[in-house]
Image (cartoon, rainbow, N blue to C red; front, side, top):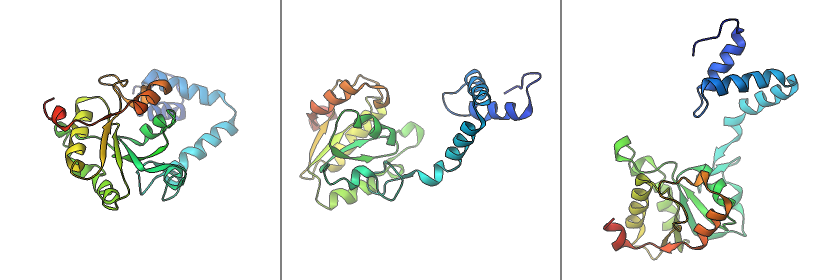
Length: 209
């Protein structure tokens, strides 16, 4: 980014660092930087402290792959959840979104979706961890909540083929989720309805799509 004439180097450096984040352009970075400069120094120090310790304090659950502060997340440790029902999602943020829909089961986060064009295959995702959970014999239903994109659908097909021979019910969240839609951008009502109206996965229909 080209520095504006008269901009102090520390401010220019902050704008450049902020604009490196996805979804933040130079103008937004400038507004954020100026807003920080206008805030009390104590608020900015608190922000700095949070950023400094972010990677140290936020981890991923060993079981489901969702956000955690310890080796396991609060959802996996919650005995009131239905741990025999597992909702499969692409990213940890999808767990946060689905929690708004009052889902009471557990999750499995793949940390991505299959994409041959981008070189992302099964070995790049958390399928081995899911294999272990299924091998334990404590899962009765898998809910496919991958995105309604081409790669998301391909990932759902792969999962249904991989685990379809097990005595596990495989369902797909309802089409209340629009084609090409990401869970992150859906409202609470749509998410809740999509989970409640999930349908059994039709292997024959999926193969012909």
